[in-house]
Image 1: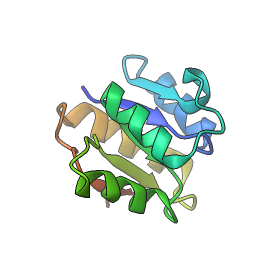
Image 2 (image 1 turned 90 degrees about the vertical axis):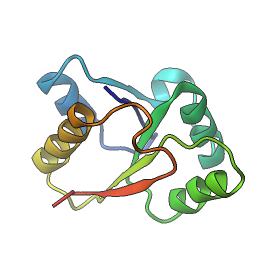
Image 3 (image 1 turned 45 degrees about the vertical axis):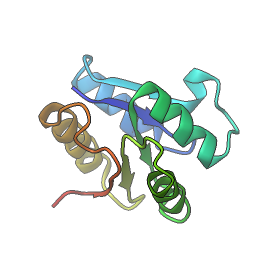
Image 4 (image 1 turned 180 degrees about the horizontal axis):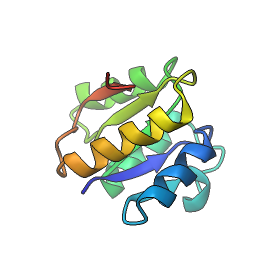
Length: 117
């Protein structure tokens, strides 16, 4: 099962919902690992070191930083960008679906947008 990192501004209600529906999901928040206030490249670097896919609402800047890592040949385990307009339940459902159906390394170097429909 994949491991996830929710960025600092990610909706905590989504994180709580994911954890409530499946306590086995390995998801931590940037705040939980001492990265509050860290810039995007630092968050992506930590996610890569830990093998965690980043959950974010930041479609404006994170994509460029993620693909910059890929172009530089650095590891980038993946980014799931969740639009802020996605309903809470739909976001939780999609994250659970991706977490349960994905294998380690499957999303390496990729940015995916939710909802998946």
